Image (cartoon, rainbow, N blue to C red; front, side, top):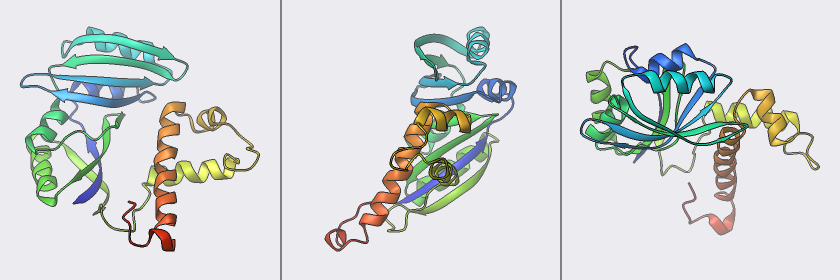
Length: 217
């Protein structure tokens, strides 16, 4: 079983590529998605200074057939929508892969992590090629390996948090302070840091005698 991080260049003609490129300061974070034969339904978190404009844009676009805001706070807005162009979801479906949330889209690029056999990763590559979607591999390794690496983004956020004193006792900055410094949504930062912390702690614990025979990662 392999674990891969992919950054996919979405085609310009796809609506979510168009709107995310038009509003590059907005984070589109897909928390759940369900493809159908001719459409897809997704739960989407939007964060950034242009959220209202993005919602208007989506509501006016012909490829977004339904849009329902569910919740709003200081970090952004949570919406459910249906689209007739779930191109990336169709690619995953054809390759026999589920969506591993969160899928993040910024400036026309989609970033996601995939855990699958190598054969299904090859099938996904073929699907992306067929739809004209270029991609880069951030990392690729066996998910059962004891050496599980942090992603570049996790490394960046963790290093910034340490330097800012987030892990000091007492803390020199709060999660809100850190999110403002990094220019990211607090909820997104919290989950990314939690994933990095989980990886670092399990990697450390795997070297302890009591965990020597247990797979933690």
